Image (cartoon, rainbow, N blue to C red):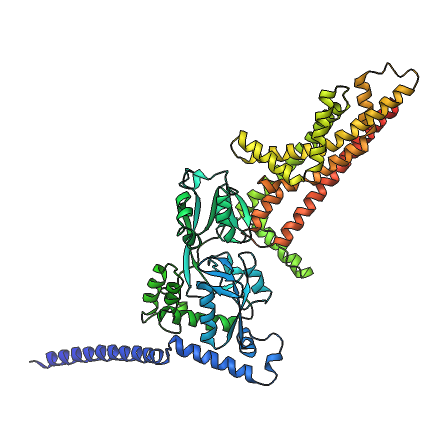
Length: 576
């Protein structure tokens, strides 16, 4: 081999060795970077034990438990109790008979407290109160059938992994032909306040009838107060075990599959949330959740799948709760924003910065809420105008009939007036709605029409009686006055109306003020609309304050108009 060939071969071998050394160095560097991670990786059990030990040590320091703004996990060990919000009227998950509590959520609460080494102290919550009670620091933890959606992420801190999963079921009579959203448009569905699926229901042009507790829904279906009801399928599962209920009712369709999360307050609960995250991992991995579900006859499909997930090596670590491959995402419940949502938020922030008041304008921030708000205002104005016209009309008719010299006309009118004056306004409203719905298919227009008739009758009967009394007085005066015998009846009636102007105006104002009661029969006026909005959005105090401002403004306008009417009637009387 020539000298040049040998040199070329040597250079080639040197380059090969250089490449090999670089490759080995890269492998070694990668191994060195990996091994420390493996070495320092912890099981959820070890991470939880350290977290609990540190918190207990802090609680044992003299005077630590009296410190202001105490970390919630430390406080739990200071007090040796875990204040847990539990539902008491949700079969299989949370029920109470006397002092005895039972259900899946109750047993989960006991298991969590036992795992932390403290006593559980239960507080009753419902769908509307569970988040406020956390924010007000009246409970440490909510285990209350609460679905984890993106809307609620801004209100509470959810524990992950989730401890159960369900979807919302729409249930109704078997004879009712309902298979999907198109079949329920313009209908009313009974729901609970605070149910996360309410926003989606409203977005399909459905009215809501609201209840505080889910446990009343089956009874309201049975007594036909509700035609349809929407609630978690896990809730209705218990009632479908009753042959009588299953014979008459069925699930029409389901929607919004959502994982359930235990939850803590967003502020001051970071370490508590971390401890509960790790506890939840351990409970899934070891089958604790699964065993509790079986003991309470709760469906176990979701929990069986979760047990397999949390036994996987990449999930069974102290960082498994932040691994997207292990935890489930929240249900995307974000609603379409309005074009002026940003400005509404800016107003909220400006007011809070200057006054410290947590001001909220949910009706201006999402399209479903804005649509409800606009329709509510329009329907309220229609209702007020209709009630005023109906009151005047019934006042004139009943006043004329009660003033008639004919016994056949006068006494039935007086008897009807006495019945109306003696009946509670709600009862009159319900009867009017029942008669209207017996004649016409239910709709928002029918409910508003029934409310207008009921309010017109109630107030018009009183105003009509005032007109009849004025007519009687004028006839008495005419009988004793010289030359009064030739006054026509129509002119006399006009004078009676003028003389009773003050009473008529009072009952017109009363009719305007009474229009919010129409929400009782499902009329979609502003009170009903805002109630629907607050069923899926925060800011209840601000929302109802705006409602008060609206009705005060409406009544002020009505008072002004009625003042003009009274002046005209009184002027007419003077002129006559």
